[in-house]
Structure formats: C-alpha cells, structure tokens
Length: 160
Image (cartoon, rainbow, N blue to C red):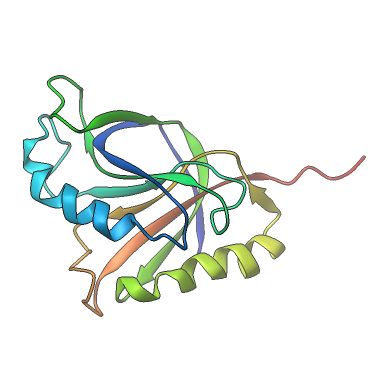
C-alpha cells in the first residue's frame, strides 16, 4: 500500500444512514437498502461514485457511530423519502487504495492505524472518514476491485 496525503474540499452527499457498532455490522444491510434506490437521487455528480462515510468517533470498534451509504450531488433539492443530505467538511486525508474483496478491507484500515500513522508525523483529526467506491470498484467479491479509503489527519504538534 502506498499512502498519499491530500486535501479534499467540502462536498455534499445524499443517502441513508445507520447508527452502528462494528460488532453489530449493520453496514451491509444499509447498502442493500440504499443501492436499489440510488437512481431516485437527482443531480448526482456522476453515475458511478458511491461513498461510505463514517462520522467521526473516538472508538469505532467499541462505540456507536453513524455510517452513511450515499452519492455525491451537485446541488440538493427534492430529496427522496427516507434519505438525507450531509455536507462533508474540507479536510486533509491520508488515502490508501484497497485492492481486492471487501471482506479484506479491514487490513487497509489496520495498516493506516497501526503502522503508517505511528511513523508519519500525522495524527487522526476529528473529522469524518470515508470509502470511495468509484469506477475501479467492480463489486464486493471481485479480486480486482479498488476502493480508496480516506482517513482525516492533522500534523502532529510537538510538545512544548
């Protein structure tokens, strides 16, 4: 994995959300509800980008957090029933591309959190993170799929 650091401007999405813990794993069920309804969303940026957004949490493993299945939109009006709008704030991110099936994506998160971050000069920022499922995403069971993982970071401040 070759992490890169980038800044993303804020953007708007429309989608569905769920409160979950990693142990509850309600995320696949959310995607099963959302994907058949994506075409109801007007003013999409394109027909292929989908985002899985994890709202900031101190502890994604043990605590409740909000997860969104959504698509980017140019502007918002006429939101489908059962969906909501969210604005993702501008932030600096470390980006890692996960290659392979979705069931092994946890390895990419582990790499960022347990290896890369410790030696990078960055720390986690209190901002949302997300997965971008774009044109290179070929399905959850496809070994050739690629998903970009964005984790919000900030520069470490040396102790004074």
